[in-house]
Image (cartoon, rainbow, N blue to C red; front, side):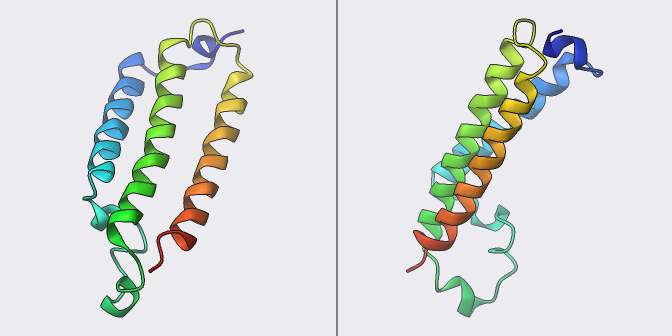
Amino acid sequence: MTLKDLSNGPEWVSWVILVIFAVLSVIFLSGHGSGLIAGYNTSSKNEKSKYDAKKLCRVAGGGMTVITIFLFVVSVWEDVLPAAAAYFFLALIIVDCVVMIVLMNTVCKK
């Protein structure tokens, strides 16, 4: 059984999501889009002053780029990849999110 056998929706949906993630990755890697980071955009000015916004955006952009690459691999090779690959890529995305959270709370502080 392949990933294609498990998918229920149209194929274009995964490509639209991939494009959205790619655009967000570019926005974050350019150092912009700090208002899109949950928690940072709602924090007070005093709390925002404790973080380097450029580093925060670049860490978010790096993590989003990794997720975008995973989504690209799954979208291109869904006919070939076994169904168990969904769990593997899910685990990688969760690990990526945890690493992003840790880096945002350590490296990005002033």
